[in-house]
Structures are given as C-alpha cells and as structure tokens.
Length: 336
Image (cartoon, rainbow, N blue to C red):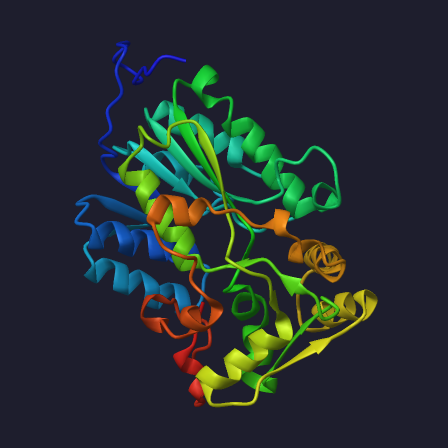
C-alpha cells in the first residue's frame, strides 16, 4: 500500500502526527499518553472526557488542562460526539471501553475518522486477541478486541489511513481498577489465579511505547506490537507490595471460579463482566502465563530498558489517576 495521505493523492507520508486525539484522556493509559506527549513538547493534544465518570476522571481532566491539553466531552455511546472530537485531528489514540456489546461503535468511529481525514489510528489491544483459536479467543473481551483489530487492519485499503496496534498483557493497574472499593474498605482483593503467576505489564511502559508510535508514525505504520512485562507475578505478591506502599495490610483472597464470579456480582460488577474476568482467571490458574512464550522483548528493544517491575510501578504514583478517593486512609495515595 503506497503512503498516500488522504486528500493529497501523492506517494508520500507525513511523519508529523499533528493534533492527537486521545479517546479516553482520563483513563489509565490515555492519561499517561497525554502527559507523555506534553512532556515531549508535542503542542497539540486533545483528550476525550466522559462526563459520567467520578472524581477520578474530573481530577485527571483538570490536571490535563494544566498541562496544556484540550479536554472535550467524548462518549463512545453517543456518535454525535465523534465528528466534534475529531475536527482537525490527524492522529488518534484509541482505548476501547469495556462493554458487553463486542465491537460496539468502533466501526462507526473509524468511518467518522475517515470523514474527518484522520491519517493514523493507534489502538490498544489484548495480547492474545489475534489468535484464531485457543482459550483466550473464547473470552468475549478478547474476541471483541480481535474483531476490532481485524477491522482496523483494513483501513489502509478501505479508508486510506494507516494504523498501529499495541497489544498488551494484563495491566498492573487492574487490581486497583477492578477492586478499588474492596482494597480501600476491606484491605482485600479477589481472584482465582490458583497461586500461579500472571503476565502483568506496567501501564507506564505501554504509554511510553504508545508515545513513541504517536511521534514516529512512519516507523510504526501498519504494524502490530505485543508488549509484556519481564516476569510472571503472583497475585499474593501483588498484595504484599500493596501492603508495603499503602501502610495497610492488604490481602489477596484466592477463590474457586464459581465463587469468584459470585463475588464480583455481589460487589456490583455486571454479570457479563464477571463471566469474562472469571474466564481470564481460569487461564491464569492453568499456569499458561508463566510459560516463556507468554513474554516478549519488544519493550526492551524499542526503549533500551527493562520492563518496569510491579514494585517500581507502585512506587511511582505521580503519574497515576486517582481511583481511591474520598476515604481518610493511606490508600488515597495509590491509584491506577
């Protein structure tokens, strides 16, 4: 496919990302990417902000404004937001919402990108989403990412856009995102990993690579990267680290799959999400994520650094978005 920029019809490729739109600027990854771009002195960053969010999102949005970002309302469920958010945008960084409807509005969003003459789309995916079979692809969350990736890979032919897919394993922020309330109120989080290690990666590392790809579109044009951490980590060890950095004794309760799914529902998670996450726990418990083939050296090759450890991730809260607010405990120092 020739390097054709929409509207020019010439065999060329503009490496300048122009104004970058981050669909979820207050999310775990989007927030870090926005700050990373501004720290790299990229002048034009627009961040999507979901007004239905809580204090974490509002606080993050205020920080982004002080960093010089343009913050606009954006809701994946409201297609009327697409054209407004994409006006004047050359490059888009996409993190999809965790929903029950598979690909959701992603195809409509890509069409809006075409209409806005967006040139390049970078999407976060799950590490096993491209597998055609196997245990991961049977999980709706992973399957939806795979379907969206398949659609995105066609944009050079259908829409004269280019893409980059950054697939990651489990984020180190996940225990904080999914279990913030129980960590805060009960000093506990739950799982069904059966004492086996999990392939976790720091969101700081993912954001660093995303910024590289955003600022060097030509090098990463029409490529897929798979990022992992450096070693498997047991959830019991995550609890020990949480205890160290919060000053509270945080424990991990390993449950059977059925009990874990019930616990998630009792704690307010929707049934479809509970089933999804229980399926991921089942794979963790199988030991698959401790195998050597579950890891890549992509991050080290791109950055010249080893992946960030869980200990260093918890020890660097300055770039986190706060999720454990409104409680007078040391846990308010931690976030995702």
